[in-house]
Amino acid sequence: MLDQIEAAAPLYVADAAAPRRREKALADLATGFRRWRLPAALARLDIRNRYRGSVLGPFWLTLSTAVMVVGLGILYSSLFKLPLADYLPFLAVSLIVWNMISQIVADACTSLTSSEGIIRQLALPYSVHILRCVMRNALIAAHSLPLILLVFLACGVLPGWEALLALPGLALVAVNAFAIALFLGMVCARFRDIAPIVGSAMQLAFFLSPVLWKPELLAERQVWLPFNPFYVVMETVRGPLVEGGAAPLIWLSAGLYTLLACVVAFAFFVRFRGRIAFWV
Amino acid sequence: MPYIAARDLTIEFPLYHLGARSLKKRLLAHSPLRLRQDEANRVVVSALRGLDFRIGAGERVALIGRNGAGKTTLLRTLAGVYEPVGGRLEVQGQIGALIDPAAGMDQESTGRENITLRGLFRGMDEAESAALAEEIGAFAGLGEFLDVPVRSYSAGMQVRLSFAIATVMSPEVLLMDEWFLAGDAEFREKAREKLTGLVEDADILVLATHDMGVVREWCTRAILLDAGRILADGPVAEVLAAA
Image (tube, each protein chain N blue to C red):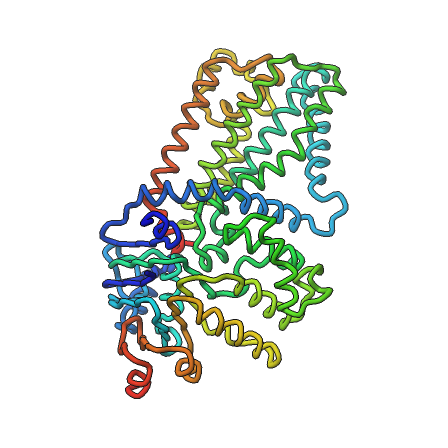
């Protein structure tokens, strides 16, 4: 009987002296994920509104990626003196996966500030806004990932069953996306200079990571590559698709970086969740 | 039983992105009332300062006071948007907040889509909230405009739609900003009727308003806020007589 009353009449307690931060952060995440329909609907709206009135809509992304893959493929295959049919599948997977990662990172910076209007008016779990950002990027990625298959067919190379290992790789990217959107969303809401810094860092990371060039070119310095978080996360998707699988060391390193991202993001969320409404 | 209890409730807004130190000094020198420097050397606006009150079931409370007295901030804090910087707040009961009518409205979506979206914001599923569309559309008098994007509505129609969407609920604790009393003349009657129903069904009403007629008609208790503090708290007649 008492339980029924409790369920019907929720109690909201906020006490500055006993903030119970971890409990509230966990409840926030649990409620956000349970109500996944809301961020899913908002993410769909974001995509629809962004391409409102455009004929191709989000397929403009597919088209521009396709043009870039073909253009860079012809240029770099002659620069690196590799046969186009060998290099193009590698480049297609690299560029598409890299674009996905860099778009996620750029969007993560505004995951909370872009929902400012809602945050200040409605008491919603913050994880809803983070999920919205992740789902929005998943929808965008879904428009260019199929290009990979097209390039494979055109070049006449089809990977074997080990290509299915790219799926756990994509799942790993999704987990990272959530952690990064949570962490960068909060940091960028508080310090507005972080977003441009992240932008330049990503540009540098593009050239430092083996996206356009193959890792073999590094020769003996390849041993340092597992320390590059962008490379290892990208490789969990690219490896199974073009190299017949990723090395166990890559998976281990990617797993550790993911764990680190989650722990740091959660720690920040626990500590500063209550301040987000004042920051945005 | 629903209740609201606040003890030493304090809300401060830090002024981030303030920049120059001299500006900071000047601000602090000229406004000893609301601005102060906190432990971390930030300039903060004291929006609510040590509020103590308890609102029990059946009470109809009006928050009155000049612009910037902290009425809307208090409503948002009660709704759970802002976490108190100091003190303690307890709200028992299902909360329904009518603070910003346009919150969560998507201009590019049709009226019907907005109704569904708003339902999702409240934690209903698509089917449940889609079922409300006809009722809401009829109440707002939208007719054929229900399936037209909201951006092409007249201002009055937008107001009516958001009012109709927002008031489909029966909360135990109703938090309302005075915006909800605005609207065109014909709709005002209908809106007033609807609100009266909501107010009567709710166990607790907290209403922020400048309209003393509304205060006398609906409320049993008034809290007069000034610069984030409670100046007077008591039966409507007493507080209004003193103010």
